[in-house]
Image (cartoon, rainbow, N blue to C red; front, side, top):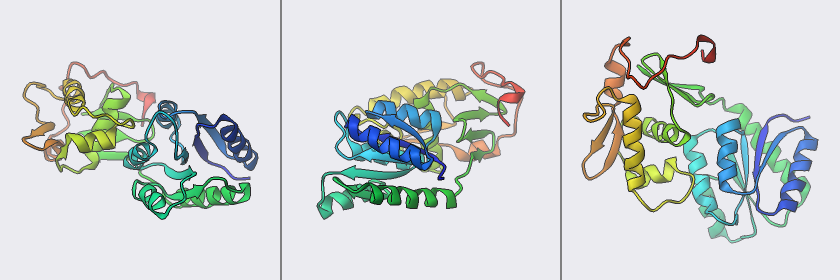
Length: 250
């Protein structure tokens, strides 16, 4: 029997149930979603090894969601689509998909492709933590510690901070941040400003004079990794940072 966690994001309830049943019979743990909002909750809650993604899911852009999943760097993606042209396949693979299967397809081929992808997920062991000196990001629990204390972040604030950290100090434009940190297609770049402001209030000692998340004029924002790695651990914490119970995280 196989093992591993798989998320199915499929608009057709009959196909979704059929695929889920066969995967469960094979031994996989399966989570089913009908739209991107449910799929995002599954990602935050369970960190699946593989996402099986409907290429024509109503109410959203599958490729945008695929790009967002790739930016998180933890789940493989198999796209199922009725589009068979080379251009469609190439576009999906460039968006971050790891494999592409056209509908209709045989169940044996589908299960074989899933098995091949799951083998890949087992051969690569992603890091469980990112360490930037006084800032530590737990990728498994999706928790952030600053100067030894846990910062209570919303899921979107966590994604924004994670994407900024992944950039290794390079500035990212508002458009890039929207594409990488938001699973939904959003056209208003000021959404980034609002979330940066709320994030600064939680991690900056002086939010009105930010040093950790810096504004780069005519570009966007960057995470100041230099100050994170140079600043010594200090008992003086932001008033919004609450101490964490010893047993909650190692």
